[in-house]
Length: 165
Image (cartoon, rainbow, N blue to C red; front, side, top):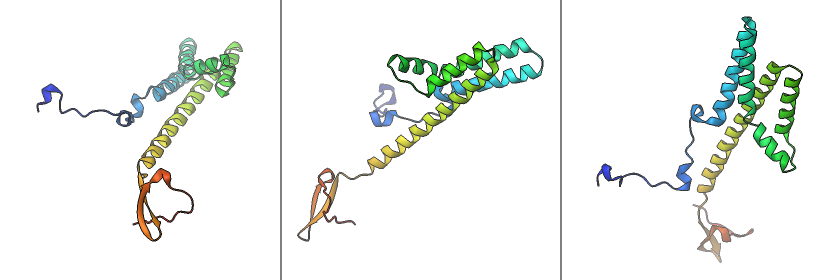
């Protein structure tokens, strides 16, 4: 079969579609990273005396960081659910109202990167659990009157004697 017809391409199943992307291609990681870069740039510009450019960089960092948690917090609020995302949103808005854009940008960056890392860790944990579940055999050998008998694993009950090789 020729490669031109596309016949040699592997078929995808729902299990193979979950390929872990490298962190630099993961939007959930890169938006907080860019928020941190903008925040860091704002700090450097502020120390260099470029106040207006620093405030612009802080606003960019704030908007990028807040974009990761504010929409979800507002959606949950309309469903009657309160959460830490709403608390962070209120804190950032309060800091901006009081004129502390730099602190709001720091808050947005730190919270967004923490959430991104937590999500990444949870994804890995889920992947590990899925891999473990694939190792569970579909059948088991139980001993009935000293004779090994194959049964479905889901039919096993507490107290049965299993034969293990």
